[in-house]
Amino acid sequence: MKKYYIILLIISFACTENDKIIELKNGIEKNFILAALERTKHDIIYNGDYFNIEYPNGDIPEEYGVCTDVIIRSYRAINIDLQELIHEDIIENFTHYPLQNIWNQNSADSNIDHRRVPNLEIFFSKYGISIPVSNNPLNYKPGDIVTWNLPGSSPWHIGIVSNKISSVTNNVVINSFDNSLYFIGDLLYLKYFPRRTVSLE
Image 1 (cartoon, one colour):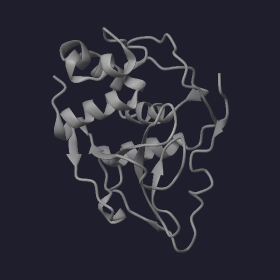
Image 2 (tube, rainbow, N blue to C red):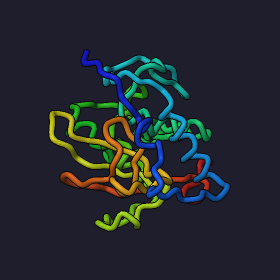
Image 3 (spheres, helix red, strand yellow):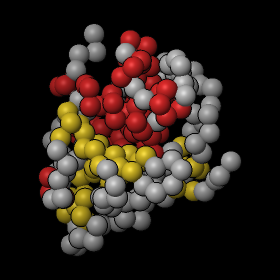
Image 4 (tube, helix red, strand yellow):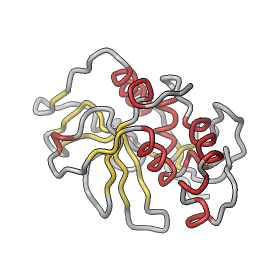
């Protein structure tokens, strides 16, 4: 198992006088961003292994995580359980997801499906808002979800746009790899707040 410590913007959130902080309005978006920012206070060991976890509201050991766990844990802090939502959607709409094509998987698996970026992309695209990609950093708003491809055997990556605009890196993205909004390969730009975009009934 490959291990290394993830530094989640702990350094980059030390603001300089040229950095801009976007004031957040009260509501679900603010709560989501604050939950994501809270994740930057944790020392996490990168671990993408398969874990058997509880369902619903299951989580891998708290000291471990990958980029998708930042998303999952931030949403869970505002009482949105992506594990349950994605698992139920895959059961009902299995062919909508790339489980067979990518992982040779023939059924839903509540232990891992929500921890995979392509599945999150499908779910957010279906039930949230899919927004055109822009090269203008100002078009990315706090709480937006961005996914992009990186070189490597597992190229998918995902992060949350924060309320900080850095004088060095433009939008700061909360994620488990880097802290700047940059473009390598394909990028998908999403927003998902169920109260506004999807009925959970």
